[in-house]
Image (cartoon, rainbow, N blue to C red; front, side, top):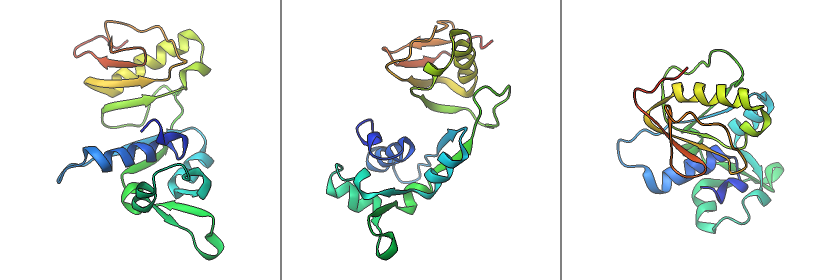
Length: 171
């Protein structure tokens, strides 16, 4: 979904990828999209974009995943309900002591976020994310990020991917 995320919000790029490749009958895939900015969340929830945001996508994807606006909505596209229903948009302050998630995640994408924090804060966020990911689950960060990684908690799987180790300390 990396190439698609330049055109639409990353959560929708992920949902498109899931809808095309991973989803089987009976599978339930839920995507949680978080931000601290409520305006960003409202825009994501609406799923409405200028047509030029999807112009470079193959026509087959545009037809499958977007509805073209008419009348006063001409020049806009809206993400189809089947994709929008896969995603929950919630406010999250990464620096809050407690995060409101009730379940642990299989995969977390935290791309190009850690670069805005100092090293001690990055370390704390990496520890906090590890507590939110199931053992064996994956964390993906951005290419420009280089946090100090606790190898008792994470197994590196390349430069930007990590597996959370089962039974590791998460302090």
